[in-house]
Length: 371
Image (cartoon, rainbow, N blue to C red; front, side, top):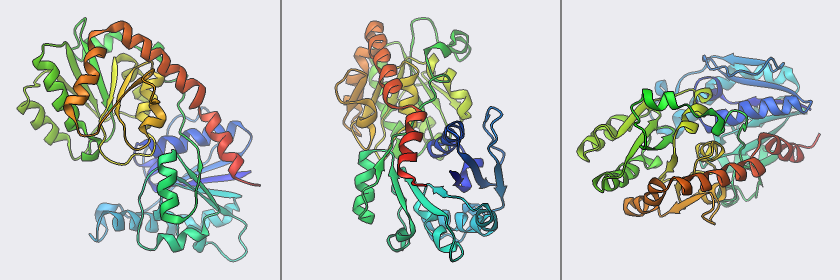
């Protein structure tokens, strides 16, 4: 089939959705399909390994420059201005399927000429619902969600229960084999210290402030723990201030944002993944990547997290959202017991290897995209 991914952000920012687009483009190409990617003018180009996957970029008005009628309107406007430029290419491409990732793009089927054979698929990862999206949703021909949690959100909004397709992980890139003791030494980790790590955008709903509170409890107990924080965003400075107020000077190792290709060595060089989100998250790529790297994880029992981690306690632990004491309680035995970390980390890697690969994702996607 001839398939296009259309997302203004895919060439201008990093994130779970962007990672999924690139990984699916590679995998669908390897399965024999003709794949193109259309994004906004930006510098991000992951290594496609020499594959013949055309990547086209087009102008758009960044959301920051749109009229301030709310963040969702601004994101819609960003995509609408992008669509004005890319529309002729989509029409000329005569694709079997165009895959979109946000309700902001539900207008696409109505911008195609009469008689166009191109159909549109929506692969959801959240709840970016907007005014009028229920009516526009009638133009979507195939529906996918990245967790059962997200699927029920979509069903509640649009009356359609989507096919559930979890995201995948590149097991060659993410794994214990990437561990780098020199990196640990370079950022100041001493022998015997346990590195808890989070990687993601620093926004309030990710709950990193809860992690800092939990770590402060453990530090006061004298546990040899440090927190490696990968990412950037509006919460960066508030988190630094909070860490100082909690007496975590030297215990918080803030490393800034990293490209997705840099993350494997960071995850493999940590000891525990910590994910204390307090907001909706369909599927956390970061949790899956930490598990694939052979780390036990502690995550909130919320959104799609239990579907990734499992609720048996064999790969990681789930805690109540917004509860630093419960988070500290879950982290304590993992910090103190290296054998337990290794046992859960090995099981975590196996869970991802058997259930969350990009080939499985692509095959499930293709089963819902009829020729």
